[in-house]
Length: 221
Image (cartoon, rainbow, N blue to C red; front, side, top):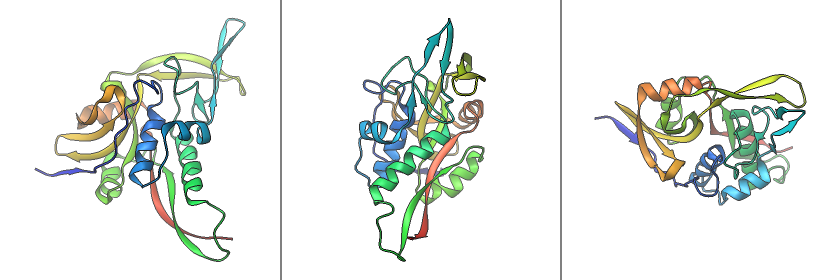
């Protein structure tokens, strides 16, 4: 039977980062790339966060497409979406490579984070997993059904944002004919296989969000 699984360092989120699945999945990817970084360092240095708060009986917060809503260490917080993790990864990768400090005119290979939202899973498998590159992948906790709510007012725009509850992030590391395989940081699940159809359904419910990295050649100024 066809099977492909990438061996990636595993981190459990449950005790210290109850809503930090996005950051934990990102750090697993960074460690796979050989970057020595902790989840705490990633969150404190690179993940932009803003709290939820009440005012005049109404709930206010940030846009999860721009920042993490709450704190990954707080079990009552929400989370963030693909653009936030892509930006945080960029910061971590840049720091690791000391971006901007190379010799003038030299060319270097650099890891570039990529927002893969909307890319079909079969393409993620072909272009990333088959090339030994894991993918940060949004679905749901234990693949439970997602549902609408809560809602809050985005503080800087006044729009109402509706969260999709049971949101969860894992690191896609492989597949076979029946399952997709993940490093799932929730409750120390470790390397686990989930049925393809259900994964695709939950992934679609979370807007088909995904992030990974690819190598690019860049010339320093």
